[in-house]
Length: 293
Image (cartoon, rainbow, N blue to C red; front, side, top):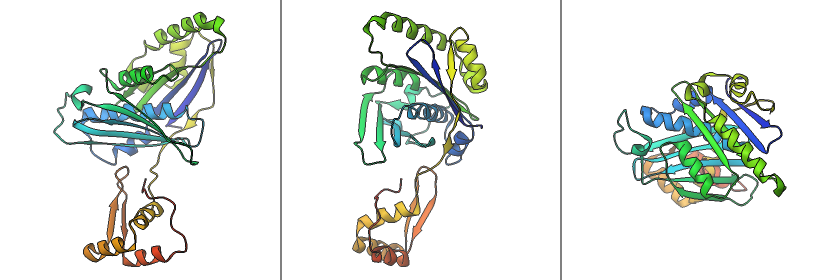
């Protein structure tokens, strides 16, 4: 299993962790576009981050991490689902220097995390200003401001692999153990801060966990596969066209000969002609979505 997520618990504490290492999924994402090296690095880290954060979902759906900025990278977005699929992209509007820093890439930025249940549940979105010198710094600030469970991430990526480590402090209703929990959390953070990007990218999960926490009682669970997969489809394209109405769809066909759409995430090309339009609007029931994604 080349792309895997490894869940673990540190026994006798209220701390859970997740380790993810992405190879094929990261390569598949890079195959969809050519990214300048500084953007590629952050995009890889973001893909690892969203893979880690999605493991905290308690329902079927997806989690989206998006960075919006004024320039030069005006959008970076990654998505992971409860089925352990991931995808992502970045868009920029100016030349990117080879030595561009994180803050050079995202000027006047903000980070947005969106929870989208697939069962019709309520959509949730949280937005904070971008801060820090790295994506891991920004996510640390995000969790500090959003009043969620204490969460820390360590992220790394290169052209071959994207990887990350997540620690999360679980709630404890026993007030008498607060001091002990604080000590355990701070000790585990200190151990985790010794990890290097090279170790995240090159060591297997068992070796890495032993390297960090060999003095702790660590309980590991079965590894889970992570795959690159886009949610676009012909059905979703047709549903979006159906939402335009038959008059507008026919007008576009008359002017252009067909309706053509390219998925931004995977570059799949969709084309709908006049026969497709007539079939689509003569169906008994309308498709159920108005987004190709």
